[in-house]
Image 1 (cartoon, rainbow, N blue to C red):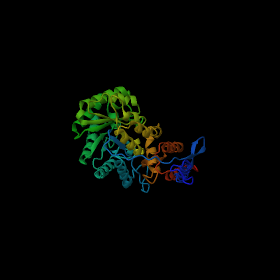
Image 2: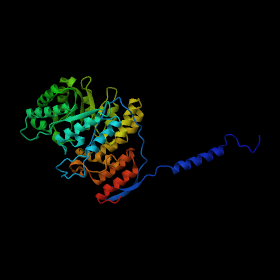
Image 3: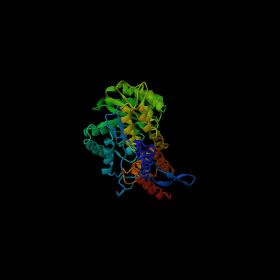
Image 4: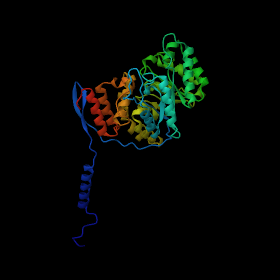
Length: 418
């Protein structure tokens, strides 16, 4: 063999080519920004973002029903008093719902994530429902549930059970007239009017007898809305559960499912196991949703979650993996989002909307950090800084440069030079 001819597989040449390739790859790596974030004690600490995580697109149907309770986008240019008036950017609000449907998620409309009863009144909610139902027609098979409550009724002392029934009837009829499916929301007025669990059974029984299609009943805990303490006639959640289960068992053909928002997985599982055949449990537990959706040998929860608004790409990808039978990828995707969700929904839990909208702002889904009711002020600067770190750790910062720029802008308004 001629010594001048190299072997077909020269190890040295192969190593040299690998080194050249590594150099090219490193030169092409994503440059990510570093910014100074508050860490407490009046101090700042440099934080370097990670490259964004790619969440593979997933197409429904999933093996779980999944609704994201969607927020509304405020109109920062409106001539209004933010604490008194609900100025909505309708175009961006509807565009966000299109974003959720494009990922395969359903939309739970005019719920507490949309600041229902916490800045958004019933006439505005009905207009929101109308616009969303119209937009949903562009997505064949799109899921949308519409919140019906009694928030146009003054929840004063002296309100009666009959007042509550009439208020529920009015909102349910308005939604059904638009062709919407109902999510039957908890009623502050009912808490005022009711004396026993029998009063709740009477109200829900009357409404369920009248609705045209099965509804989702929403049990919203007092951690989300203190005015709902003692719902179902009992401050003890287990006794309250007895009343709720009896109401559902008496009308199983009119109840698609129940959404439980108590932030207690054991209570949700206990109730899930007591539901009549065919009635779904929709988890509203923004602390433990991953394991509740995955389920156990005796069942699982579907989902109707506010956090799905903020983590929609990850949620859809995880559900796609679960549908394919890939539980490992499901948990790999969702596990890092749980610390973020627990932070967003930390007490006082009712201020979680601030974090949800901040995520939309960081990710370019809206152009400002302004909420209805001025609720952008409801969380501290330290809270927002930790939210940024946790979102980045979960791979949920879609564009680090944009997010860093926007984070700096928000911090600057709060006197922090990042």
